[in-house]
Length: 215
Image 1 (cartoon, helix red, strand yellow):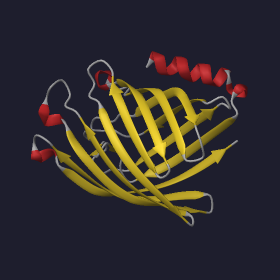
Image 2 (image 1 turned 120 degrees about the vertical axis):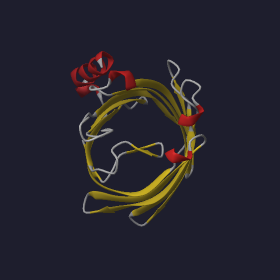
Image 3 (image 1 turned 90 degrees about the horizontal axis):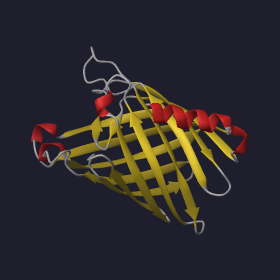
């Protein structure tokens, strides 16, 4: 949490140095993390802020009212990232970020990762290198834009945590985003296939409404 505060204060103090700032607010029917529900099918609200420099350096932070394992254990997710993006052409780009995810009410669940992304036309490959024995995660996605809509397909897989094979698995999702009057409406289906306990298999449909502002 101290690292998050440090980066957040640093970004605010250097606000004028950024070429572009983007803020987004969202209302979601659930919070899905790598194919797993974080809020037991209950709605969440969230906010993101992202900064970018002309020289390719990027940073941002987010907060979401998610991650309640039970109704008596409310908490929230707060995170930040900082990194660099290199765009070789209009359709080819590479980026890497340091990402910190924090749970104020459950600090033992905090984790940090190194994120690497490579995008080629409508495809993107992502690799998250977990730090301090946190499991690695791989993801392949495809997005197709048409009119004011985006159709996307995602496949992801993460390794076991602390050699516990019950906790790893793969996930699949597909959905569509529609932009209308300055809002983005999203609907997607997700499915999680556990490599260990089949009781962890999960699927569902999630809806999201978001509003983004750039300046």
